[in-house]
Length: 488
Image 1: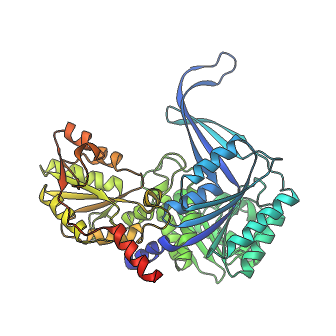
Image 2: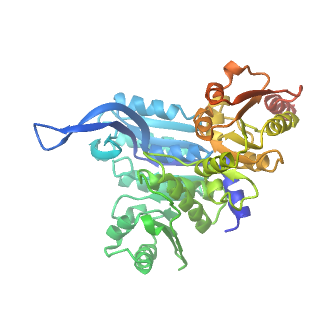
Image 3: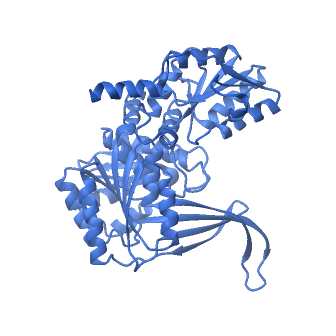
């Protein structure tokens, strides 16, 4: 798959719209340390230090889609409890997730609590109900589905066997989506794949396929045979089988089979990797990709996410950086780990590094002037670029105008820029800590005291440069003028 095609697909993530229906849950990570064994039983005693809540299950699929720069509608069922409020709060923090959760007083919100001591998971406690939905709750969920379908190009059914995708809901959802002409991607948990009949794509892992087809699925041909057995019964059109360290296999109803080797460089945590795969496939298909190309990009995304700890996400910028290694990349787009290596190498050569950051949504002469001043202040210039998701948190759901892949590519084409790295946080503070620039650059509309990271840089003997501004140039004003032209 050529880079130009990959770029076109990734750039399309920005305008894609996906609908996720399934088992939403809350992932709670309790962190601490173990210093003794309990006198009551041969079990470790965890001294709890902190906890972190994250959306899990179908909610994590939605979170991954949003992190890749797209808008997503999330449908699911929660209880009427404090866990539901915590999950709603987590989802509300992401402006591009439209969460339409049906409350059911008869069941608890699904919660997975993982206890992690000294970097090692020691226990998991689950709170959940696997019962089928009550008729009234089912009707409410399907009513929401009917309303949301018209806005999405692709529907994802994220089945975690917690009851939301009971037989009747699954059947009705597939029928509604097919009548609406939508692509239907199913991440299955049931060993009876027949309940997903009519789907476009199924994305089982190796063990799930093995349970469904009834024979071992380890070698390439075994996986292909198992998938073809399912395809022959008319369950779906394509099966994408995730195989851990053996990568991914794409098997199509017309007989074609493609095996994609793993792209992971270092594996820390596989939690939620399947959610990342489904999210990337759904967005790539929504952006017009052929299914094998969609799987190829999803394979890259999975390789990135397993290198992170916890239920993590991947951005489109990280994917574009991963498929264009810095050693041969003329576009100068870097992932965090490679730009850190690059900065370290430059420092070892005695070169001074400047750092500037921003949204750079619609590039204008003011931006060019700031970047030129930044480059003249040092030997090399690294630009930190806000990811789509962070811009939407800062500026609202209608920004940015251009996706992070497009913005990074334009920045990398500027002569004064030596490297571009996309960050998803609201501020570049952690990036500044990692890169340790000699010069930190912001516009003269800031003061040194209001520049994020200024104290870190000056404490190391660096300086803060407040670049002169060109008057009359503002991205926000440009967006307003364009909106006014269309309104008139």
